[in-house]
Length: 185
Image 1 (cartoon, one colour):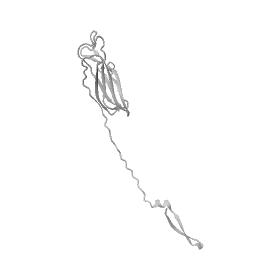
Image 2: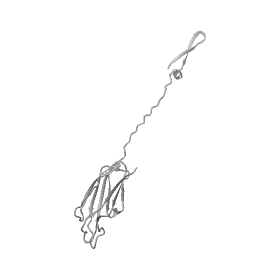
Image 3: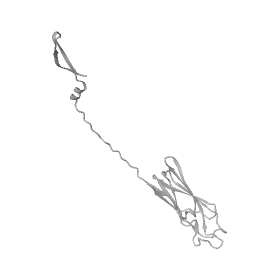
């Protein structure tokens, strides 16, 4: 705290007494240099490119057709967004090239089951899974990852069912199985 002498008071035999005025904070403020205030904003940005890709496919041969044969397809599935995965069978089974409805007691279509497994993160690891028959997949079925993203590839297991009737007609059989991947924002 600072002080200054502003005047003298005189009275009788005692002489003069200096009057002291304590100026304190008011005087300090009047002498202080005004501080300036400035502000600086720094904007930080970045991005993660979205990707949702499916790779694989090709051809699977069961060889000579019979019931309970298994084949596995590993698909490259890389999706850093929530996604839907659709499954569809064009024929509802492995269909005979010329007689898909069969002939006499012999069948022209061999059904199969499909088991799909896709590892996901949300933020904990989980597995998106679906089980269908080829007949059910004549109408496209869609599985949703919810809020999860893909955490690796996909695995599809196909297993032929037992033939109906007296067995299968001789000949070539084929099927187109379609997998679609759709990112959801």
